[in-house]
Structures are given as structure tokens and as C-alpha cells.
Length: 159
Image (tube, rainbow, N blue to C red):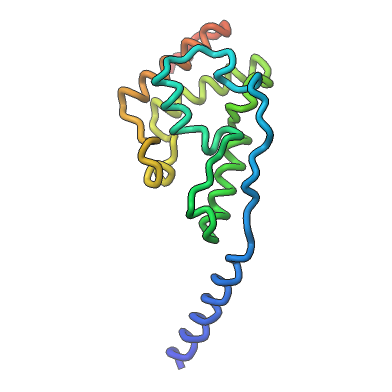
């Protein structure tokens, strides 16, 4: 009896798994207005630009690149959700459209995320080795974001 139930659930699982492969995600990136991009006005070291683009832009910009595994459900659904949430939280491609207050808040959050190591996400780094940041790289980037924040007239928060 148990064997038969496992077999039925196994067949149902396979049918559902195969069926969801026909549901595709939207891989179209929103249009890019270069004048709104973070780097259109903010000064960053060339190394910093490369690190940010490798570690952040896939989820936090309108320049997402979709790897081969984005064609496999349910991984594609998770990937789509990460990109949607990432863009909602911070979108480097639309940064210049933010108010000064929002820019200040985002810059502070970015520095905190880098220093505390919770961005980029571990599951992203596992699949994208260029996104792995050393402690020195994290500190360098956080300092560059702090300088930009100071140039907006805000001081580093004391914790």
C-alpha cells in the first residue's frame, strides 16, 4: 500500500515538474536611461565599478543577465522573484530618480550590507564566482559609498 502511494505521488510530482517547464518567466529588462544610472554622476574607482556590476547589477539594475538555469522551473521562478525584489529595494539603473533622502538611505543600507556581509546573497555567489567579495573589497566599496553619501551632505551613522 505504501509503495503504491509513493509511486502515485512520484508520478504526480514528475507530471507537475514537467508541466511547469512550459511556464516561462519574463526575461525582458526594462529600458535603460543612462542618465538615471548610479554611475552617470557618482565617482567610483574603476575596480569599484567592476565589483558593483559583477556583484550587484544582476538583481539591482535593469541590466539583469539570465544564465542557462533561468530556463529551468522552479529555479526560474525563484530567480525572477529575486530580481523583482532586488529592483524594488534598490535599482542602480534608476538611482538618479531617487530623492536625496532616499539616496541617503540607500547608500547607508549598501554600506551596512557590505560591512555586515549579507549582500550579495550566498546563493548568488555560489553560482557567480565574480560576485564573491573579499573583506578588503567589501570595506573599500563601503568606504566609497560613504564618500558619496558624505558628498550628499550626510555623515556616517554612528553605531
